[in-house]
Image 1 (cartoon, rainbow, N blue to C red):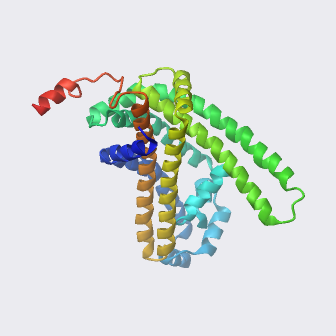
Image 2 (cartoon, one colour):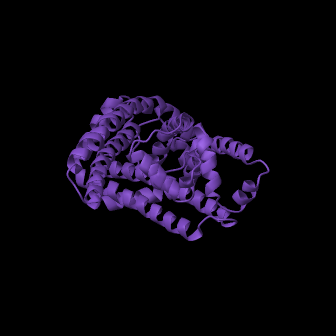
Image 3 (tube, rainbow, N blue to C red):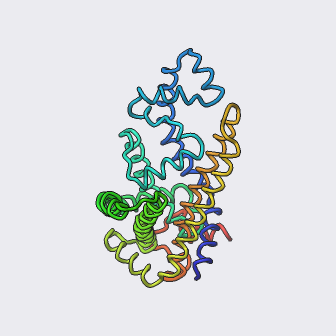
Length: 335
């Protein structure tokens, strides 16, 4: 199987299981909703019945936002002009690349979100590997089977990403970058040097992400219980199929960039002032849905590539199918 065939097959598998996409979108909404309501209460208390409340309801009051941000702490400190429209994407990207610390409440919510993804990840990959409907019982059974295995894998992931952000990032940007730009007199050159270091750091992150993705795929498809064994097997598969694996990853990443570009164009065209804020909000939710769709395509296409290159199509070793998910039940249903 070529990487392009795996990519197309991954898109087909994701689109044929819309319930998974709807479920992860609902999960994202439910995790962010408490933070949204808490921030709403802070804004309502600060605005009260002031004139600033009227201007804030009809548009963006930057002076008031700066006033609010100056006295806000915790979650309230995140309410800045950068959270409006596509600015939120750029702000998150900047914080990610520059290793900027977020308020503890945001970190806590992100931690809950990650744990929920760890739980659902096994069921999602299992569903895409089987390439057929498994119903809620089969989905959550697979999620439960692989949860603790993925949790052990997450410990290794935390160590690897901790090393990247704790050692590689400071070495690149706090040590190497100042040395490389010490004698530069052209700001543009310094900018390109920093961009080059971002690329180096991004490649390291992408390599780790691809390795752990295939570790999850091999853990599910081959019923592997050892996190280290799944990682070693993933590295072996990537080494033997480097061209297809890298091209597939780059194709999925290009799809992600396309989604970002489309959202940026739509957000800039709408603006988000006055009544158009509701349109901007709707476009933002479409973007979240599209971003999750791309994330699922990463997993589905990597699963398809692995099954096409190493395992026979549709092969999943575990969990063992039970009624009504067993082949015999499907045979009766077709009779």
